[in-house]
Each structure stands twice: as structure tokens, then as C-alpha cells.
Image 1 (cartoon, helix red, strand yellow):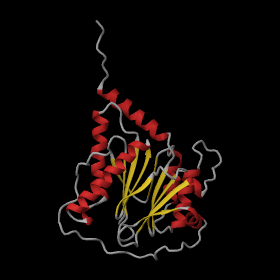
Image 2 (cartoon, helix red, strand yellow; image 1 turned 180 degrees about the vertical axis):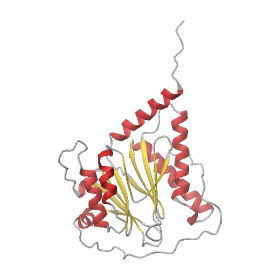
Image 3 (cartoon, helix red, strand yellow; image 1 turned 135 degrees about the horizontal axis):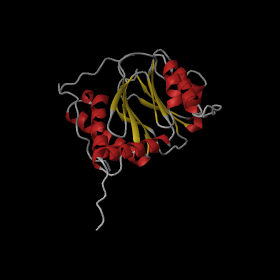
Image 4 (cartoon, one colour; image 1 turned 180 degrees about the horizontal axis):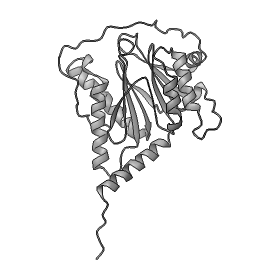
Length: 263
């Protein structure tokens, strides 16, 4: 009679974590950074169909790295969560903190109970009414949540660039300045070799614009993106301004809510 196969819980958790980290590290990085006019999302992504950066709700954006089908399911579930909460209570009750808590529950449940963890790393960002009120939450494959400030990079080999990226960030950077900082991080060679040259066609760039009154998400593509990368004025961009914080009528806290099942 064969002996039963046994793996200690500690070893099982370590194996799952190593598996997820290796899968995430194989992908290309995404930089999410605050700037004077809002929050910028910059990803190395030549695909025009498979987005790493998306809108979740009025003032909330989503960025992810890892397996596309897995983080796309998370994105869809997040949109459903936001729509349901905004419809049931008030649009102001949909917050990045509540969404991050819901994602953490789902990621943690999969990591502990399923044979294979999700190979994803996620940033949920909410632009505030003025500088210093933005929210950035980084979520990892095991459901851990970290509140970030200023700038965060996920995916790829980030250890060699995260230090210079944070040292170079300032709260008063304009959009061309923060994009130039992100490009330096994305184009750096982790092995210490010469930096690559990334063109607008190889990038996926979006912003949450602080001055917009409701839906703040905007993609930068084509000539518009090239103009921003070149430091030229962007036609149609709103002037720097603040908007009053929204107030909800429900009075209900934006706490943890279970995510509805994704497609």
C-alpha cells in the first residue's frame, strides 16, 4: 500500500507564493503615479486590444499585471461591484478603499483555498478633489493590501528601479514630467545595461484628471500621447482646478462588500 502524500501547510503556502511571483515577474511593468493634475497610469503594452489599465468608476482607475484572463475577471467584477453600490446607495459611496477590500477578500480566498493562486498584481487608484487627497492601493496575489503614496510600480523586475522612481517623484510634477519619470523606470535594464527606447506605440497611458467633474478617466493615444511625451501643450485638456468633494445621501460606510462572480 502506498504512503499518503503530505505537504506541510508552510511549504504549500511558500510554493504557491513562489509560483505567483514568478508568473507576475515575467510580465511587463506598470507605473501608477500621482501628479499635480491627477493620477497617471503608464504601462509597456503594445497591444491595442488587451488593456492593462482601465476605468472602474467615476474617479477610480484600475491597473494590473500578470495573467490577462485572471485580472480581466477581477476588473469586470470590480465594475459590477461599483455599479451595484453606486446604484443602491450613492455614487459617492463607491471608493477605492471599499473596492480594494473586496478585491483583497477574493484574492485571499483563492490563494488559501484553490490549488493555484491568481498570478496578478493590482493597483486601485482614486483621484481626490485636490493634491494630497488621492488614494493608491496595491494588492498582491495573496490578498495583501498596501496603501501607497506618490508612485508605485508593479510587475516585472522592479527591484532595481523602484528606488530611483520614488526618489525622482515630486507632488508638483506636471503630466509630461511624470510620464518622463515613468518611462525612465520602464525602459531601464534590470541587469544594468543600457536603457531601451520606448515609443508611444509601445505604451498604454491613461490619466484620472482631477479637474473633471464626474468621469475623470481618459486614455492618451496616438498624436495626443506623442504630444504629451514631447512636452507640448495638450489640446482639450482642462485647466488645473479642484472640484468639491462629493457627498453621499445614504450615510452608509464604504466598507468591505463581497464581489459578485465574474464572467
